[in-house]
Length: 85
Image (cartoon, rainbow, N blue to C red; front, top):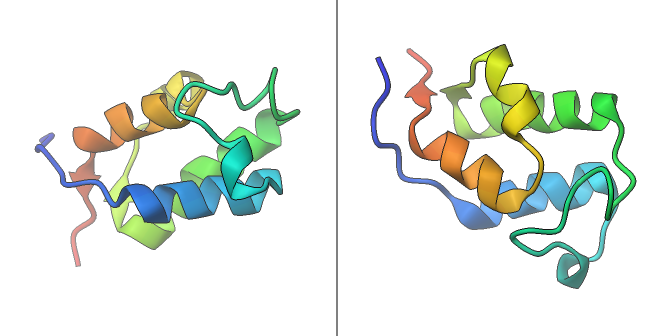
C-alpha cells in the first residue's frame, strides 16, 4: 500500500550530500548523481539504503533506477510506504 508521505527534504539532502561527498551548494534538484557528481551504482544503492533507514520508509528495488537526482528521490519518497514498527 502506498501513501502520500510527507518528505523531510533537509534530511534527504543531508544523506545525499554525505554519501556523494558534496558541498551543500553543489546539490541542486536536477543535478545528476552520476553525470554531475560522479556517483556509481554503489552510491545509488547506499542512498536508497540510508534513506530507508534514516526516514523509516520502504522503497522497492525497482525504484533504484529512478533515483537520478534530488527531485526524483523526493518524488519516489512522496509515495513510499512507512516501515511498520
